[in-house]
Image (cartoon, rainbow, N blue to C red; front, side, top):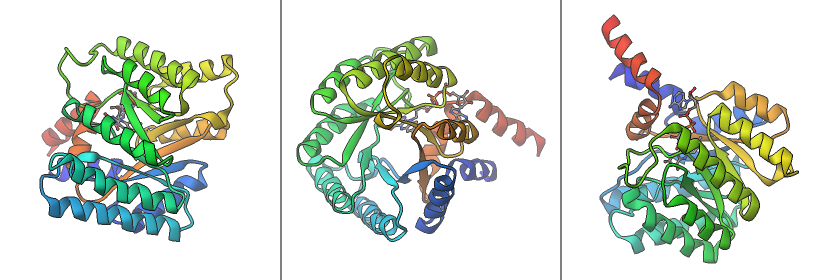
Length: 282
Ligand SMILES: Cc1cc2nc3c(=O)[nH]c(=O)nc-3n(C[C@H](O)[C@H](O)[C@H](O)COP(=O)(O)OP(=O)(O)OC[C@H]3O[C@@H](n4cnc5c(N)ncnc54)[C@H](O)[C@@H]3O)c2cc1C
């Protein structure tokens, strides 16, 4: 467990708002913007969901008080999606409304396929009322091409990632080569018809292909951004920022870090080896 805790430290900015804001300030000094995530997901009771809403409302005040331009990211299952859709909508609406009044942008993360449609529906409903809300699309899902076409029509701001959940082969592309190809196809659709895409990947090939694409299509650097996860390949993203690209770090913090860290462990076999090797060293 100590090993997992040690690994958690590298992917998570700390437990508290103060630690998160300090991480945001450090990133800012390196030319990198942030989106803050209060860790939590799969909430099954209203008391916990309401604590999560309160944590985000408080975080918005903290961001404002710090004079920061950080965004926030949240997961719908943390806000009560598994309890009741309307209840979740009202919770997230409160956060998006307050964020809007403070000039802050809210990104709704995408979770596993049991939640995909409900996440998109809830987002579309919020989008009718608010501009300061965006969504995430996963390039490994077969359905994503159609979802992106629909989202482009409503002027949605999309973060494009590969996808981090264990999905059945009927729903998700499995070969990395094919996921990459779909990623670039979806990215091109976002650049052509979407609004301010966020290219969220640590994959050097995809980053290089994106740089080539924007250069070939004369897309200015202020029309999109690169995004990365706290604790992963930071130096490369500092370099991208120094080259003049907009770069944002996803900064998770809080005490509910286990599921987030297990996804980080699973997506890279070296991380699993690190844990196993250290277990045998003891
Ligand atoms: C800003 C951001 C937001 C995201 N939001 C979501 C979301 O809402 N929903 C969702 O399903 N997924 C989300 N993801 C995760 C994403 O779907 C992938 O699981 C994750 O980014 C790994 O894929 P990759 O594109 O970075 O490429 P990979 O091919 O997995 O990684 C490329 C290289 O990056 C490094 N790397 C990647 N992952 C790790 C790791 N865990 N530990 C150490 N090094 C690593 C390694 O050097 C690896 O070789 C998000 C990712 C980012 C960057």
